[in-house]
Length: 172
Ligand code: FES
Image (tube, rainbow, N blue to C red; front, side, top):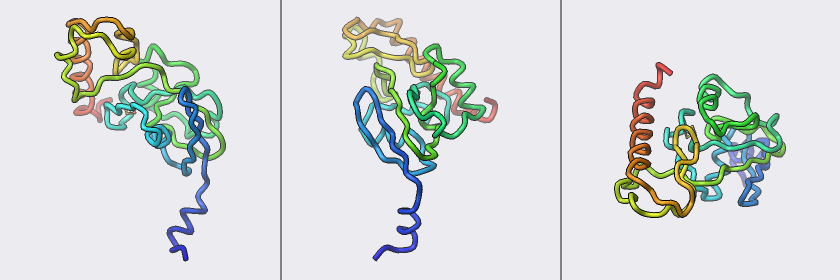
């Protein structure tokens, strides 16, 4: 027998999110962020700004069902406007909440390095896959290309910038 809260949970609207390029379909409850669907597939979503709508690391392209997502609010719009990879269908998956229906999203190819990675140690190595800038989403190092000291410094600067943004959240 279901408890009252289980009954009300089961009555919540569900949405179906199709995720490319991994070709997965995930059911998500109404009002959950799109990010929930991505994380259920163990995708490499760094969430560098801790889901505060200030980085590019959870950026997705919404190919279908954009009308089934919450509208874009001020902070998300500002962050997206700074992304060179931003398209008409771009959303930050930590900010876009599902409202029901069918949605199809595409995760940009490439990876964002974790702040826990020791960037210094990557200098002189070849990138395992494309490395993307955590704030702008732009391609920094192509797959198989060498990671130079300059790139490592750029990554460190980006991480410092994100820390600065996080400590000044109210002024953004
Ligand atoms: S985790 Fe940074 S904008 Fe979503």
